[in-house]
Length: 395
Image (cartoon, rainbow, N blue to C red; front, top):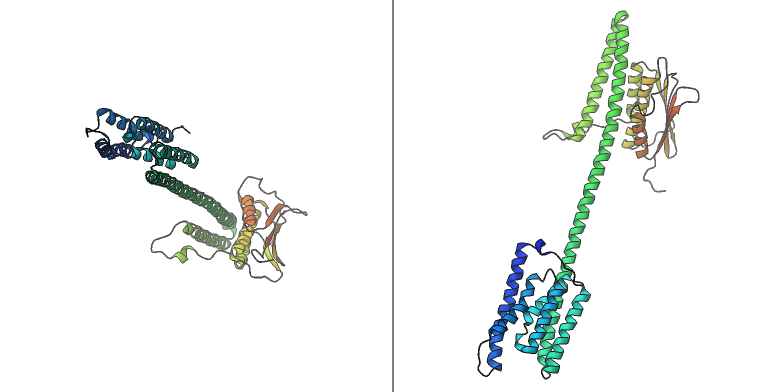
């Protein structure tokens, strides 16, 4: 109970000055009381002596550190007031005692405030009613001031606690907002990384394959080499367009057209063009669709497109010459099955060599599906994915 509520060095200069002024005010308010008391209770009507001012100074001086040791200051003030009352009842500085009681109620637990208030009230009843000849009116008046001091102190404590809770809640909300922003930024970086990998890796693989084919055909079939190089140039332009679209999401051009930066993303309708580009790069590929296509969300279409693009890119890289690829879309009730098979003889790149398979799994997992990639039962490589089509619909 007597532990300090703070440290003297931690108090702001303004509060230190306020406590000193409050102590001086408590003493100054009681000086006229001393003069009136002496005039009424002394035969000579002499002014207060130096000893009375010393006692008054001892009563108000502890108020300077009332915020540091609230209960200790209250105890010292109360003890000096009791001793002064035994010498001369006019020396009891009620203002200083009420200030000390208010400080206990404002800075210490409610139980401590009620105990200190009970001690003051007991002293009032004993002093005014028992010893001073049943002065009930004065006792009631002093009881009201004691209750007011305790009530103001408890209100101050409750308000301080409420403001601290609001500040703490605001700090927590700010931290949560920053954390959510960091998580969202990390998720967006991962998404853009997957997009960039899918776009750049696929188009560069096609361009490299076309360039090698053009180099081989340059000597014997210049017309065929020129056609292949035009296909490579077209693939490069598509790569630039996709890259600009992705980068346009990251920045906004003042005065620019947002629709131009946010062009429609690839979907199932573009799978035919993707298969044609792969065939032009030298990989015989076919697209098979089984079932009646339902209304597929745009984000799911993009997921399927990127899955097929990544699988065909890996086939171009690792399946070897003479390989063929088949892309099958099978629409079933509530789900879409996507299978990409090739009959290449070459082994795929070792695990961890690139981020394609990892990005593929992350993309399918984000859509609520699952994917399996590995050697096929008859050789070659197989990618099989299952994607739900009824996401968010009531069951």
